[in-house]
Image (cartoon, rainbow, N blue to C red):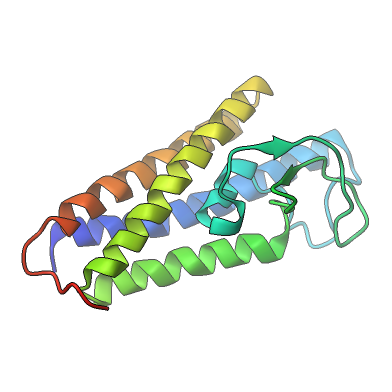
Length: 173
């Protein structure tokens, strides 16, 4: 197994882990700012840019305005009409990232690598958007997490690009 393939898979796993850290961190900030800003499960608080790991929420454009969560509380954030702080979305992003990391490791196929490159590239754009948003809000800790996630995804995209150029990779899934 090639070193770039391993780096790509590790970057996907690290990105997913840091994504969860960021969601928990933002949920903690919601707790401090407004006691009613989180659900009883405490699973809200996804940085909106991080949601780009899931293609349905990959655009950095946010609409202001509040909306009701499953528990009836308001989060104040929507990305393409989707609540990026919803626990099901966070879970889906993590499952997709981990599943793709597994495919990268066990399938020597270019399409899998290309999908991973695309996911990492989209995530970098959204992670940088999230970094800027957190810096605007003067939340240095969350900005640092967003920067770390962006770095992990950038490393993954670069490693995937190197892997995709490696001769001998099967062009079929």
